[in-house]
Image 1 (cartoon, rainbow, N blue to C red):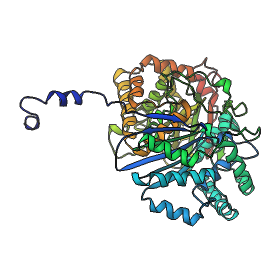
Image 2 (image 1 turned 90 degrees about the vertical axis):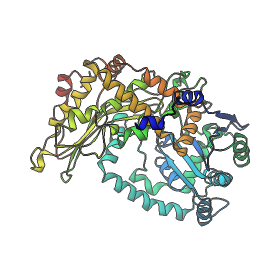
Image 3 (image 1 turned 60 degrees about the vertical axis):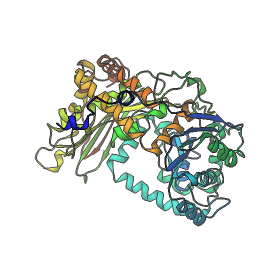
Image 4 (image 1 turned 120 degrees about the vertical axis):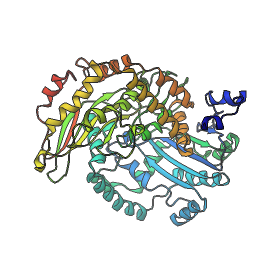
Length: 525
C-alpha cells in the first residue's frame, strides 16, 4: 500500500529513473603546478563551507638520531607565534574565521588543514602558510610543549591500545624508519630546541614535497592564493643529515590500477582507514616529490617482545606480518581480508552493519567470553605494511573464572589466519566484506574535510586524484581465490615472512613457534 502511495502511477519519469541507477559523475578536479613546483589541486564541490589543506612529505619515518622527535614538536607548535603574529594574535585570527583549523603528523605526512566559511578561505591559507613557513619557535613555547609531550607519553603508556601498536612497529622494523615512534622519545624531549626545528623544517618543507588541496573553492581562486602565500618558497638542496629519503630506485612506475593505504588503525578500522583510502590509489604518472631515501628504506625483521604488567585487568597479544606496500596489486584483496576478519569489542550496541558478522565476532568473540576485544589491523605505508590480529583477554593470573594465558589465546588467532589460506571464503561472506568496505569508503568521503585530505594525499604521492568509483570497481573484482593467495603470500609456510609478536600482561606467550607450525602459518616460526 505504502509503495503504491509513494510511487507515481505511471512510474518515475525517465530522467529520474535513470539517475537512480547511475553512478555519480566524476568531479572536474584540477591540478596546477606552480613555477616553484608546489602543486595545487581542487575539487569544486559547492557548499557553504570550503576546506583547504597543506600536505607535506615528512614525518617521524624520516627522522634520524639527530632530529628524532622533531615532527612531534612541529605538530604541537603549529599555529603558535610566527614572524608576523604572536601566539595570541594567531589564536584570535583562527577563532574569527568561524571554522576549524588543525595540524597533525604521522610517520609519512605532516598536514595542516582548515574548514571554514568560503569567504574566509584566504585567511585560512594565510595562517597555514605562516605556521608552515615562518614559525618562530620561541623558547617559552617549546618549554611549554615539553610538559605536554611528557604528559602525552604518560597517557600513551597507560593505554595498551595506543602504545602496543607503537611497540609493534619498533619490533617489526627496528628503531629506525618505520620503526621510529610517532611521539618524541622521552630521552629526546629536553634536546628539542628552536634551531633543530628550524633546520628540520627548512630541510623537509621543500616545494617539491608540498601539495595544497581545496574542496568547495574555484581552482583559479586557490591557485592565486597559493601563489600569493607560497611563491616565496624556493627549491633548496637537501642536507645529507636530515633529508627525508625514500630511495628513488625503489619507486616503481605507478600502476593506475593499484591503491595504497586502504586500512590503518585497529581502532574503528573500517571508518578510519577507508577515510584515507583514496589517497593511495595509483596514478598514471609518477609523483614529482624529491623524496629519495636510501637510509630510511624499511627493513622488516619481525621479532618478539614481552612487556610485564602485573597490575593490568587484561593481558594483550598482538601478532603481525609484513604486508604489501602501495605498489602492489594485492592491496585490494588485503583490504577486503581485513574487513572479512573485522572484530571489535565483546559488547557492541549495533547490528551487522557494524561488523557483527565478521569472522572475529562469529568465530571468537561470540564463543569465548574471556576475550574482551579482538580485531584485525592493517597499517599501510608507501613501501611496506603491517597486517595482523590482536586480542585483549582476562588473564589466568587474575583468579577469575575463564581466565586464560597468552599461550591459550594464541591458537585462536593463528587458526583464523590459517582458515584464510586453507579454506575457501563463502561467496556470501566475501560479498558482505566487499560491500562493507565499499560503503564505508563512500560514506567517509561525504565529509568535506576527509574529501580534501584524500585529494591532497593522492596528489602528494601520485600526482592525480582517484575517484571513489575507481576504488569500488577494483574492490568488486576481488575473488575468494585472491583472498587465499594473498594470505598464503603473507603468512604461508613458504612465505619467508617472519611473525612479529608483542605480548603485555602477567605472563608471556610460550612456545609460539609450535603453535604457528601446528596451523601451517609462517615458515620462520
